[in-house]
Image (tube, rainbow over all chains, first blue to last red; front, side, top):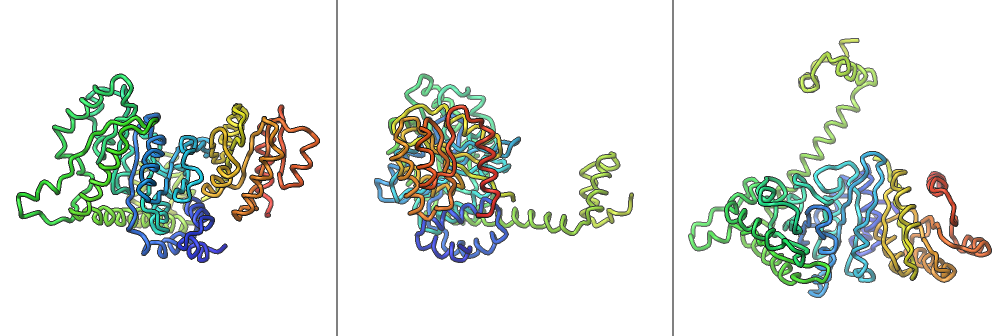
Length: 339
Length: 133
C-alpha cells in the first residue's frame, strides 16, 4: 500500500494500515514529513500520559492496570511500550507485552512495542510520530511507557500531558529523592509495590522533598503562556501540586485513586490552558529537532568524499579541537584547503 | 535508516517450557533484530493480534506440547485473514518428522528441532527476507 492509502485507511480505523504507518515512522521513511502533514490536523484530542521510572518498578504492570481501568470507562487506549536497543548489535528484546496479556483480544486497545534505536532520553526516535498517529486515529488515551529510566531520562515530560513517575520501595534514601532530574518531571508520583517493606520510608522521603520544592517542579516547562490570574482566590489553580500515591499493580490496588488523579490533572491542564501550551512547546521542539537534523544532513550531502575525509584528517591528526573545527565549518571557512 | 527485522516469538498452547523460545529470542537480538517476546500460553488469536500490532516480518512459534497440527494452521489462517500473508512463519520445538512436510504445505517456512543451531535460525531469516518476495 502507498503512504496515501495507508493514511486514508488508518484514519478510517484500519489496524493494518495503522501498524504499517508506525513501521514507516520507525524506519524514518523519506515521506515522513508529508505523512505527518496529513496526520497533524487530526491530532490534539487524546490525553497523552507518560509512565516512567527505574527498571523493575512495575511500569508495564501498572500500564496494564491503568488500561483496564480506562477501558471500564469506555475509553480506547493505545500503548507505546519502549525498550532499549542494544548499542552493540542494534537488536532489541521487547518484553513489555508479557505483562499485558490480559489486554489481548480487546479491540479498544492497541499495543506497540518500540526499540529506542539509538535515541537517548528514554524514548524511541519515532515516539512522537507514533503518539501523534494514535491521537489522530482516535484513541482517547495514549500511554507511553518509557525505557527503564535512570535519573536523566526526562524527555517524556515534553511529549506527555501527564507524566507519572513510578518508584518502588528500597531504591534509595532522601538524597536520591533530592537529586535533580526524573523526580522533577512528575505530575503524579506512584510508589508501586507498596505492599513491600520500606514503602512508608519511600513515601516519607518523597513527601519531605516535595513539601520543600513543589514550587520548583514544572520549571522544565519554560514560559508557559498563561496570563497571570488577577484574582487571588484562583491563583492556587495555576500550580499543580504533585500527587504521591501508593499502588500494588500486581493486584491493581490503588489504581482507582491513580485514575482519579490523572483525570484531575487533565482538568487542571485544561482550566489553566496548559493542555495546549504543552503541545505548543512540543511542536517547537519537534520543529527544531527536525530542522537541525535536516540542516546537518543537507550540509553533509553538500560535501565531497574528499571534503569529509579532509575534515576527519584534521581531527585525527589533532590539528584542531572538534569544537573549533565545528565553528570553522559553521563560519564557512573552506575546509578543502589543506591536504 | 536501515530497516530492522522485527520478530515475534510466541508460545502457543499450554506447555510451559520457554527456555528454547528465550534462547532464540536472545540469539535474534544479538543478530541485530528486534524481538518481541509475548510470554507463555498464548492463543492463536493473541499471537495474530500481536503480530499485527507489532507489524512483524517473522513469527516464531515454539511448541513442545504436540498440538502443533492444530495451533500452527490456526495462526497461519489468522495472519492471512489480517492481511499479513507475507509474514515468515517458523516453528521450533518437538515436531515429528512426518508432520514437517504437512506444516510446510500449510505455509510454514521452516521447522527447527532440538539441536538446531541458533545461527541456522538467524541465517534462515536473513536469507528469506533478503530475497524480494
